[in-house]
Image (cartoon, rainbow, N blue to C red; front, top):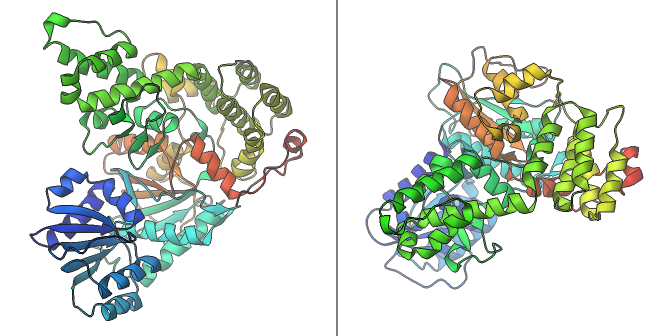
Length: 570
């Protein structure tokens, strides 16, 4: 169950099937992203693919010495582009691969357009999703619902992405969904319809225990995407943003030209692969070790590397080091920028209070700490609003709820109306009335200590206490304890044995913290393989955009006294 491998295999097969000779890879906007996640340009070049083109590009040259490999989503737009292409072919021969099921009528239209008989084959290769990590996939959809219901276009795209994922992994699953979510039930039904309609495609060799697809809704845990992160991949996404493995560093003070955009991919960056799930403190020391190993080769110019600034200076002063270790200069830059932001935004202190709000139940202490941080000029309006959102979600129905006072504090701090409105929108999106589960089950101190600090060492513990709600859900599922009255099966059959192959999909987006949970469960649970997917992979910024896009606004009187209703954006 490795989604990166699944997509990579499809691309390799396309290129191999076209035989020897020079080739062009013709893609659309989405398949360009799908391919770039699993292959670098230089890797594909080695397979005689010398040109990469977009099907919608108007000014492509005629190159009859090239074979064309077309990898496209089966949209009406792409079929129209292909029809135009085949009427006036620019290449000698065409191998056409659609990333999902293509209708017979579309194939007929293409056949009719192929008057010059340049099409060698038309096939379906189900790489219709973004493979982020081996156990994590995304559809790059932001704003999938309108209110509590699906945007019909996004429902169709999500159904296609999810069924393609199942086909690429060769799984025909039983389906369970979150009962409290109408959107989860609707998606489950749509996926089931496709499996029924395309039953021949889903006729895989039966396993003793059938695979399971579990469909969840982000509304059930709005806490996880609001927290600052301290493991490498999650932290980079939270503070810098990862877009199809690319990180924009152009805003970093004094950045060199070649580092304005960097790629972080575990497939071809060994340091990243080894460190993506480690915490920030360990990464700093691992980079230091890497650089000290290099320095040992230069005994004359020994210099101590005490700080991130020392490391940056070291990299800048050694052009040959830069050459040998493009990877290291990239990671020193990224870690240096993370370090600068942590310090500038006072994130250690902010994160400690976030963790308290997410994991503990001491209302007066939490309130006091939030109020204290709201007075701190180093705390940005974004982080201030985030703290109030976490407070509002946790203590929504607490007898001493002080949300109106905190909303006044936000206003006095000069926090923009956009962020103040988002507090009530987040409660409307993921508050107690919406949740199908108890996100903040009371835990005594001993249970908290056991659960969160087991096996952890050092001061980072306080920043990594939180476990996403997904951890509990999957733990119960694996043990056969996930309640059917909360997560029913679609259809009459149920799973008698403990599940082995599990695909979890979160409507409204997954997070890298949840991906880490899945990675750890895969490592520590023999015989169980889990893949996590979401309509997108969120950081706090994109999650708040998701909330805004849903158009939900507060109906609670308490919040509306302090903040006006947030208008629907679309």
